[in-house]
Structures are given as structure tokens and as C-alpha cells.
Image (cartoon, rainbow, N blue to C red; front, side, top):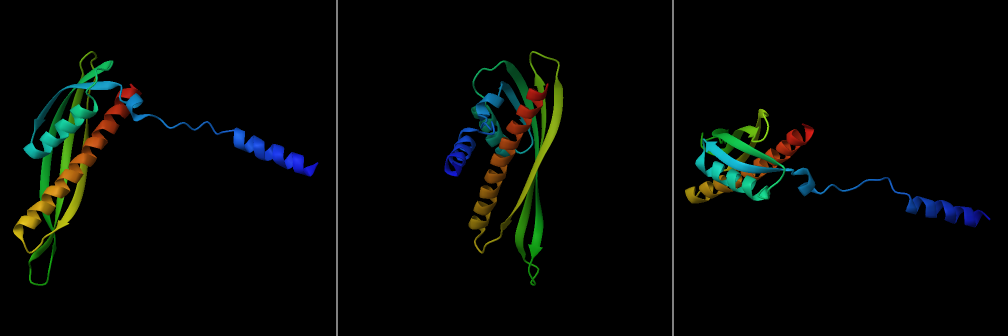
Length: 156
């Protein structure tokens, strides 16, 4: 008798679920970016523009215009005992202005990321480290912009 009750309880736990459902990210992107205008750092803007337009290229019910204003700061983070620079920090700030084409909704928000890279003995490798860091930070910023836009446009 106890064995049957134990099996019924285990079977009921296995069949009852909590209702958790993984949300498809494409369902949250209910907007399409019509135009992207940029000012500031050209290389960062180029990567941001490509990533934003690639992720939202299908026509959706909401069309928006985006204006990106980017800035990059390169700051000395560490020096050694000989007063030689050993590490730089890069801060990328992006101000995003967006407005819906079919509505009167104009808003802005800003996204910033920072990271550091080491200085090597070869100048070309130092430049390569800087370029890789900028690419990684730009990808993270683009993802953050898409997430923020989907939150703001779905909340309206």
C-alpha cells in the first residue's frame, strides 16, 4: 500500500510542471529599425549600425529611427616602476535617441561599457589588443541596445 502511494506521489511530481516557458527572443523584437544615423567614433558606429540592422531587418508592426552618438576614452590604467604604461582602459559611451515613425514617442537612453587591455613589447600587438577589446565591447553594447529597445517599446 505504501509503495503505491509513493509511486502516485512521484508520478504527480513528474507530470506537474511550474509553467516556466523559455521566451523566444524574436518574439520580443516587435520593431524594425528603419534608419540609423550616427555621429562620433566611425569604426564603433559602423559595427553598431551593422549589428542593429541585421538583428531587426524584418518588417514589424513598429518602425523606429535611431540616432547614435558614440564616444571613446582611452585612459592609462597602470604604470610600472619605470613609469612605463602597462595597461590601458577603454570606455565606450553611446547615447541612443529613438523615435517611432507611426507614433509620437521620442526617448533617449545611454549605454556604456569599459574594459582594459595590456601593452605588449610589440606595438602592433598592442594595437591588435585594443582592436579586439573595442570589438568585444561594441558587440556587448549592441546587445544591450537591442534589449533596452525591446523593453522600452514593449512597455508602451
